Length: 226
Image 1: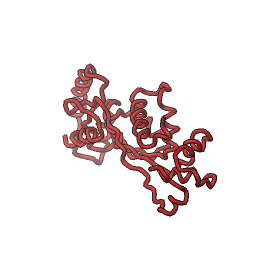
Image 2: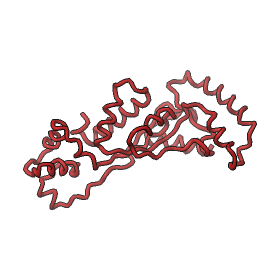
Image 3: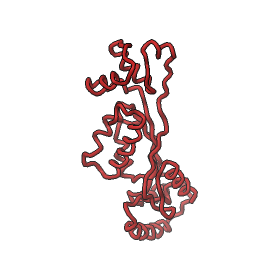
Image 4: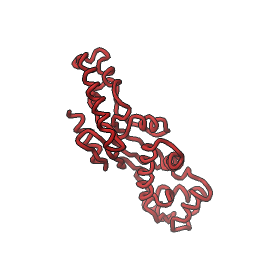
């Protein structure tokens, strides 16, 4: 039960919602890491760095050793018009994504992102899990499954972790069990990844996750996510 409480708390702290301590009605997404610039004041003055994203602005101006511009138009021109997205390659952003389906996790881990994910094999934390639902009409079917699963688990003892008991019990679960993942990519990679996943017919939850990440990045870097 403690694992369920921890999972529910993580989902809520990242902006998600859980119904009746069992059913995830909304996943959570929260920024967890971001590259910090270490540019000296002298460099900032020499290149007339005027934006909050001084690292990216310096990357753009170093491209052509151009120090005369004092606004973000030049950065945007390099990134969008000339397609030199590498100026965002050394800026990494990480997100915690909590309370998503196993299927969505599989899609995310297939990306080029740096991943830390919740394990679900030989672990007690996955014996009893939360479940992601689209609406409350899913609940009766999940409850029927849980009854069946409890009957199935009664054949085993879960106290001996030297055999495959834990793994067998965790395998006998629904792919809509709620999981959490932390992933990070460079700003350049996020830009390309999100464009490929939004409005292109991918799985509905994956697209919703990508849209939420896109909106958060748009607030941080408005010149690159319009």
